[in-house]
Image (cartoon, rainbow, N blue to C red):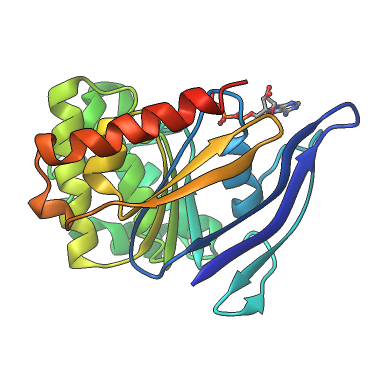
Length: 246
Ligand SMILES: Nc1ncnc2c1ncn2[C@@H]1O[C@H](COP(=O)(O)OP(=O)(O)OP(=O)(O)O)[C@@H](O)[C@H]1O
């Protein structure tokens, strides 16, 4: 279990996140939803240890009950944009997270090479990011994130730039990858269909200052969810978001 306790983030002038706590189980997806600017990305960035220098963050991160320092190898983070470097090939981009963690370039490239096929990227190894479709870029970014084999993954709106069909395919693809290798995922999204389709638990944030106002378990396992069955939950989430709107 990954526990975030008493997180407060602010600038000299304003509190952006106020005394926020959340728990991430070892497996399954926890969605974090809330209005723009309530602090979702800042919570992820602080947890990943990359909060911008002009923000102050105070809080505790606990892994299986032990306080841990950030950044922590057990946690990987995928920022809002796919953040692929245009001057590196897809393989070099995918290997980058491992290099940051201390592997040589050759070792890192060897580690990612066998994964291209299951990530739907076979044949793209030597291409550059701008030669890929949006869905392929997201998969390349996701490959870079998960190849680090961290137990927890923080995903900031990973599918928001994709068209509706590609988004649905990528959601199914994410479920399949997590079934192969279970991890605890914290997924920031603005899309209530995506949250109810993928998540086991939905955390609703309000703010500023950012805080969690509801924690809602999603009924049925992801493979047994129909649009109709999830409609009342989406209505509940909409009401919560509107009630707590700034
Ligand atoms: N580096 C920064 N310096 C000062 N204020 C910042 C900085 N980064 C973010 N903020 C402010 O912190 C608040 C929370 O931003 P954050 O990006 O975490 O929100 P969010 O909920 O993820 O928004 P969105 O859904 O639009 O991505 C916003 O008011 C934003 O303007």
